[in-house]
Image (cartoon, rainbow, N blue to C red):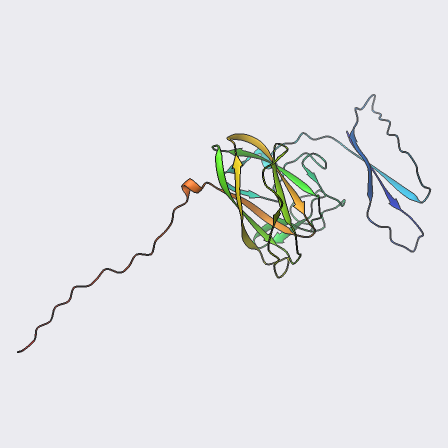
Length: 232
């Protein structure tokens, strides 16, 4: 099982406690139906929480790896739970949509996006790359924050620098940002999306094979031949 130990600082019954602080996040083997979890009490005003959850192997959402080239829907992160398929800094889905875990998911048009994001949160996706090469990267996002964006990793290795998206009007109006290029190798991989800054909504990432894009040219209308008869 996975055991997460957190604490909050308690002062009095009339004051709300701040966000939780992580003490440890470890896996334990169950023996005869029991586990022993050491908790070091460092302050009598700390309130401790212990969460015990069964370990679910990381796997693609709905057992289908996201195809590249193509779109990776950000809300379709892998199953596997906190610390394995994602890391979210609060305990509940603040958007209340789509999935029943700690990742904050909000409505986005006719679909969904992740929202209420915080610096350092991350999600992972099992992807299947059709062929090795350089891909154009696009992202659908909404934010009214400055200096926010994301960073991508493949199999634990960074494949982009911090990608900072332009500030928008609000968190409901989504725009597509051309985020540069990324090199990928053929086969199945784990793509990690890490949040940079606070409060950027992300709907999807798109990986485009530049060799499959076409340029459309406007066609000029054909010249019309005309004739006329004159009396002289």
